[in-house]
Length: 512
Image (cartoon, rainbow, N blue to C red; front, side, top):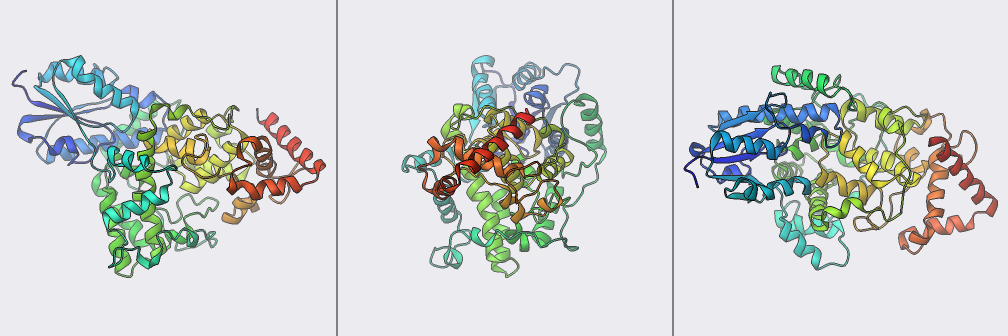
């Protein structure tokens, strides 16, 4: 062992100044290594804005750490000797600094975890991998919770996280208001155009960000997406400004309209905070505690506060737990045996289906779509059209700025596509055009007729939905939550069923 410094690699989603590996180290005797590497930008072809956001946030984080007294060794993507991989850059840093040991915070993905676990043998120096305690639920805690249950339902996990944190609990330790979940109050369609609708802050790129944007434009020209609308916060301070804007202006109506969709309104009352939470610029527990305080001060209705907190300490923590609990083979699951290729319009937004054109178009422009657009528009179409889950997973991972595999894969394969056979959801989230019509203004602006199932102008979602029901009868008919759909299908006249399935087959043939 040498007398050299401690080397602390910090990854691109660990942009937190007190991340576990840093908290355990001495600034005077450590070197922080931050690496921009080609492998991480191209293992899937990430959206241009996603790459720009992460790289700019990394560069600003390095400046922040230096201001806090850390010595930072920063490797830019276009550095002449950049090896292109985490392991290659750690190898070069070991040569430069001759460290006595490496300390690193655990990776968020199986793929990167394998790299970290290989370093001790490869470099012949001690490597300590610290648990990422930015999350409420450690891996062992989730495994213990899961082992005691036949079904891994998020609702019961969420209640445990509420008890653990004390969020929205009354004086007796029960749920504030007498209910754990106010989702039934959070399904209102948008009330039409609202001149007072909040808009997220559009941050002006500084010199550091402009340099990144220029590099991404030149180097990743064949990746999906536009940089014309780049507006992301790239520092902790900017992320906090967006957090305050959401809490002040949008949270009081977030719950009511969190499932709503409007043409040319990509943000509505949503927070736009998930990229900052997942990259480490914001503290999820501190955010939820502030939401709790605002509820108790009478500034936020209970359904809005609960709905938002549930997304973070409930769903976000639960999804991470499932990802690590199920193991790296989770991504290969395909319970419904879906095999169709992802349609080309997922990369262009060019389709006559207005709902898909809207959801995909704003994704291309902003690297963002809210959860109902992902679940009930792009996800629902892929589900009922029988698109291969792995292709859908790769697309979601590529196009959204908040998408890291630990959070994206279970949401896509489990929640949107039912590819895990019901591990996450008790039923497939399949729907025809009526749901979209109820929750949006998309259908009134579409060339297809949402009330028709067959015919040249019939909404494709309608025939595809019933075709999905028919072709998956062997797998789904015994699911009690699907019973009504199968009773309705069985009551249809044979000629109507045949015409519906023919409509779906012709549409899918044309799609191919």
